[in-house]
Amino acid sequence: MPIPDWLRIRRDKQQNAEAAQWVKCPSCGELLYRRELEENSGVCTRCGHHFRLHAYDRINLLIDRDFVEVGAEILPRDPLSWSDRRPYLKKLESDREASHLSEAIVTGFAAIGTFPVALGVMDFGFRGGTMGTVVGERVTYLFEEATRRQLPCVIVTASGGARMEEGMLALMQMAKTTMAVDAHMRAGFPYIAVLTDPTTGGVSASFAFQADVIVAESRAAIGFAGRRVIEQTIRQKLPDNFQTAEFLLEKGHVDIVVSRPQLRATLIRLLDYLVDGRGPGRTLQAVPELAAQ
Amino acid sequence: MNIIVEREKSLEALEQRIEDLRARSARQGGESSEDMRALEDRYAALQRDMFGHLTPWERVNMARHPRRPIASDYIARLDEFDELHGDRQFRDDPALVGGLGRLNGRRIVVLAQQKGRDTKENIRRNFGMVTPEGYRKARRLMELAGRFALPIVSFVDTSGADPGIASEERSQSEAIASCLLTLSRVPVPVVAAIIGEGGSGGALAIALADHVIMLEHSIYSVASPEGCAAILWADASRAEEAAARLKLTSDDLLGFGIVDEIVSEPLGGAHRDADRFVGRVLGTIDAALSHLSNVNRELLVERRRAKYRRIGAWQETSQRFASVAAR
Ligand SMILES: [Zn+2]
Figure (tube, rainbow over the protein chains, first blue to last red):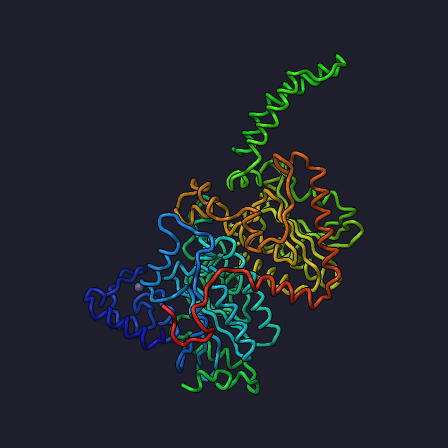
């Protein structure tokens, strides 16, 4: 659905629920007025805690014109006939209803500043942002289209890793997306990854850490193994800052840590450095669908 | 306790009796008695019962059998092998063995996840769980293979990449992601053999290949059954159930197009006839390399890309382009 639709649905829902006007910050406990929180890009005005964002809210925050979604028709199946507490297909259905998303990533074209980009935004609210076949296919398709249209690619990650319910087909998406990143890279177009809370497992060990520039959102949990797995393995508690964006910056694994209100401006500056001013991908003509609107 | 090992123990008494009878009849120079034939028949029937058809969980146990051939058993059978150590940055990871070798006269680069035979060696090898330094060594050798046009042969046997603090501090994610990127463009044949456990991204990091060979009772999975059960149900003890659901057996994966060839194992598993079996696996690898060596470099990488491009199971509702998501 286009973003205006999404925003309307959300506002309707909020108006119906009086309690939803106030949100408690899980980090400092402060009661925050929702409108104020939204105006501050979902960052706690008291302690700076970054709330997780819905994919469409994130897109809304980053883009300047409309968003042309592609790959939305790529939808999940149930290749393993998976069922545990509930059948996989039922889990997908309830996540679709709860999140207003058809899968854990939204892909399309947009302009960030004056730069047309291929943009992918993951959403932790759909199956924990896990990568199954659809996420792999949409990411791959996005990079292929970006390469064809000579566009830079921006991917905002939020993922618990590979999706168990699609087994090895999910794991293989790491290989598939890597090859699409590789082709885009060798064609000479920039790729910027924005790592948000949380980015782990199969997504972090593939396209998240293959970008030309890796931006991490402040305090996001980023790592290969999940915190719980490591704690169980070593049988001790990990320090609070372990696997945070700031920790990774100190260890030398991400380029920049930004707080969310600065993200869009940071991306525009990075695109300005990396995009060849004379290249065809520099103008909105690369995305006629966008220019037409 | 490994359930395959337990079963083998239950057969031991019978095996001993057959041995004793054989020895006695050999001493007496007579033909084998009725008793003997009956025992042998019973033994064969028991073996078929126990090992003739293995469930996914039984295969998990087979893949982890303490006597299953491990990477060093294959490497020992190469014509030649010279190990090359270290990632040139931090340290040498003993869980990933790499080097130059020769298989049936052909020069190759070897990458292998190495478990240990006993507890002491397993601790040294970190149970085959590779750290970022191991993956960075692997990547260095992949690039070396590309420069000198040497095909890459990898032996995959890990429950997963190392999940420790130090591995996170040195970015396990980046190390694996870089291996994948390198394998996706290296212009030489890549053949991977899943010889035991293929656990998650830690296995795939050296298994993105033109030809993936899987041993019949090996497993290859998005997560270890224990890990999957912990993630989904917060209960690692439901590993057997997870194993059944994950579709991690060789036949499942051949069906999905994720592996290209299965090497069938002797009844009771690879370790029952290890010497001959290891030779057969190396022969299969050699045949795949012969086939791939005829393909020109660009086409090779193009085919590799096309092979992985197809993998998945999704549906498409309408045309590729839609500004409105189908809900
Ligand atoms: Zn707060």
